[in-house]
Length: 131
Image 1 (tube, rainbow, N blue to C red):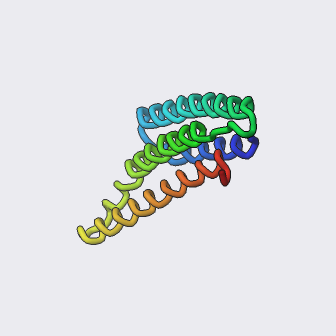
Image 2: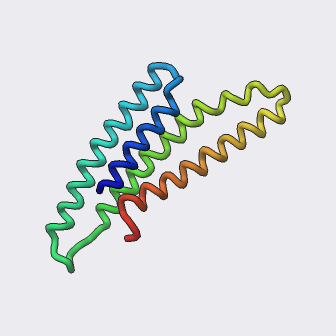
Image 3: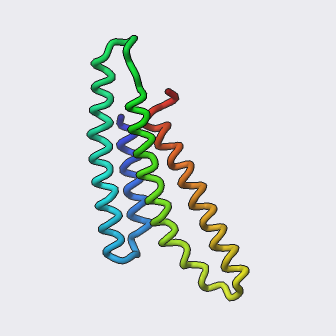
């Protein structure tokens, strides 16, 4: 459980670094969303784990826990990809030709989508393990 808390703190530090130079409404909305999401996820996750521990070994069904983690993996990764695109896509405006701008925006979106996919996978592995 300690590793999950440490990675959660690192996640919030990363989000802070991402949006530290942005407008106040974006900072407040993003932090409010992720803090509220974290509170809801942590309480539900602990509730699911407690209900699994109270069941007998033969009757354990991890489907509810798996669905809970999968849902919140998307609720964390998709908004983070949207905020990242909002922050990073305007940077290629300094390029002169349309072709170079389109290529840079495409590259940035590819990196954001790839990183979001791996964030989703990492979240699932962090809270479910290999199960």
